[in-house]
Length: 102
Image (cartoon, rainbow, N blue to C red; front, side):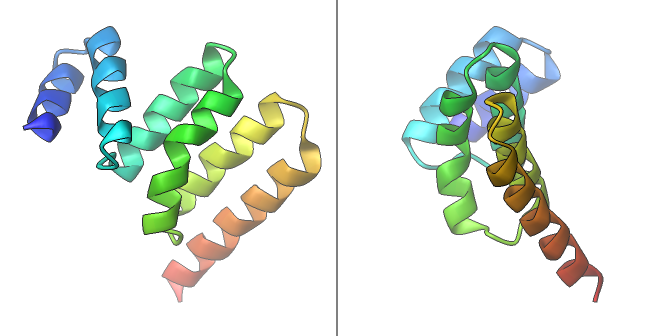
């Protein structure tokens, strides 16, 4: 049911509702990796990179091979000026993407 509500909010381009539902999905640990990336990027744009990382934690545990999650994680670190951690996350994304192409 929550996934359907998220899908409808996305289709309607209702970003406020989508963000609220994404927070509910994150709390329930059912956030899809793509939605986690979207929410994380919105949190970064709002100046909340640490909060953005919170949305990425569970999907990264479930799907550590999902390169876009690592890219989003890198962006959270970059937004805080944490260059070494950002570069490490980007390196993980590159390694995961390369593994898929093999």
